[in-house]
Image 1 (cartoon, rainbow, N blue to C red):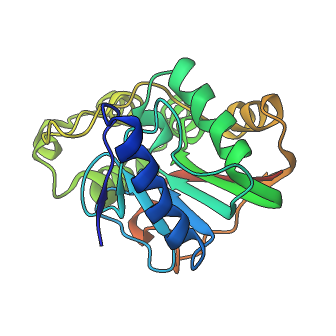
Image 2: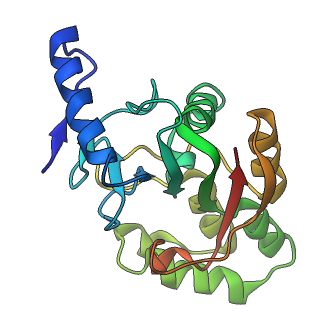
Length: 212
């Protein structure tokens, strides 16, 4: 059942909502944030738009109790929120809601890979990126050169105004520094798992995992 949460709710309504969330968490201790249409079974899905279980803008906070979940998973979301403020809120809040030993998994477009491909004139990478990420998008016909493809990785704007454009680019080094800044340890690349992640995101992305 979808739970609608609004930042403008009065305290009584917020309390009632938190009770329902606590009930869900008693059955699930894994959370996906910002999954869009990619709904992950077995997870509590939180996003600003349907089909999430909890409709909420996490740029302010994550509406879950401290030390209440084992896994926080998020892919192709971080680049859609402003850096550094909202990104800092996300990492700080993810650390807060995780149990000791729990993990945060973050996947983003690999800007470092795109930069390297452009610098080396790697047309195979750029053509594959264009085909796999943008073939069904209106922008496809306007990708005329390698720089256009690179720009989309960094600045992608969707025709659907529900979604923010890409505000920031990330690579392994940049993500690792963010994990360390907010107290995560044992930071490593995450092995892509199609049971959780969106299969179409595997190419051209970097996934990292850090533990509380």
